[in-house]
Length: 168
Image (tube, rainbow, N blue to C red):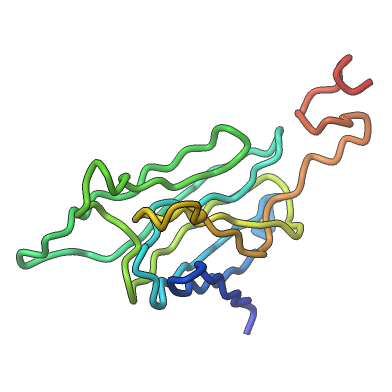
């Protein structure tokens, strides 16, 4: 009952479902957990990203996907986790480089999690799409969720984690 579900529709394609839950760890950190199911999108998913304000520390990031076996054609390489560029991001392969790469394919579910040094606020997570769409089609979708809040220093007006001349 503490999990929230959000639908994300890919125009002219299909739907992803995001389930999320944020829990206080009791030590000043919070556990962010996300489950993304590709309900019926043929374009599949290749990345999942959560915004990360400057000054927020991330630990214990993890990922769980399907286990390919018995001659499955798909590469089961886990998605890489990065915490740069203002986000914590899990990236899989690009379709043009490996059409059989580990994508969040039709009717599968992947899990993503991390601990953060700040509590939650409303924000958007982004699912990057694996297969290209028609000309002009979006390459990602945003889904409303809970994300880490900034460090809250009221003097840091540009939210870069540093109070300096840039805040003037």
